[in-house]
View: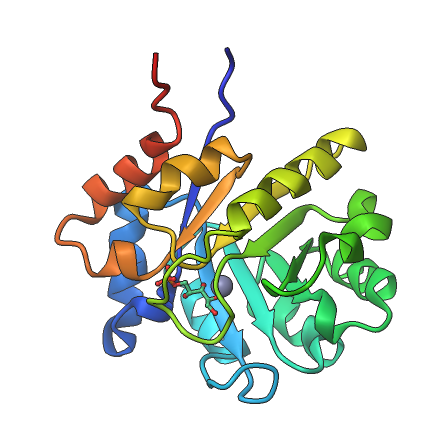
Length: 225
Ligand code: DX5
Ligand code: ZN
């Protein structure tokens, strides 16, 4: 049986913002594959976080892909700014994009990989028409806005359904899962079909980033006999 490699994307939302550069360097040294940056506008989600200046600052301290998750009401207005700041991936919520296909085109025109995500209550049907235009599908497994929330169990089935949809169209897009991902949940999430695990609190509250990242990566590869 061949196993897909599992990528780990620490979410800096749970890092110490007073020492963000150090936190990013530490998780990079500990084996992180991507750096996940949560952008919240206080409208689409009830929280405010970082914008392009933070992405630009992070760009200068790491060569890892900056995986920017836009939880904002008007993502189209920000595509150029995030590209110039050095984002590698820009992921938008389907709930915020009335012209989603055009938004994804614009992200590509700006040289970034295009991701699409959906809230736990949003149906996977909303992805159907754009599956062949995306590089990343991000399944939210908490309601977006805050780190440290518990994984919503019904999302496991949703991950499996998205996996089947991607395989059905022979898509090479990566299936990323975000919210409540910890050592207990990583195995079932990967076995449901995830390629990329975002993890904030589980990594940044641990004493040993390297051990936690490698345990998260391996969790899905443990096959019971
Ligand atoms: C939630 C964010 C997540 C969050 C994950 O809105 O999109 O990226 O930081 O944090 P944990 O892993 O603590 O659930
Ligand atoms: Zn996120």
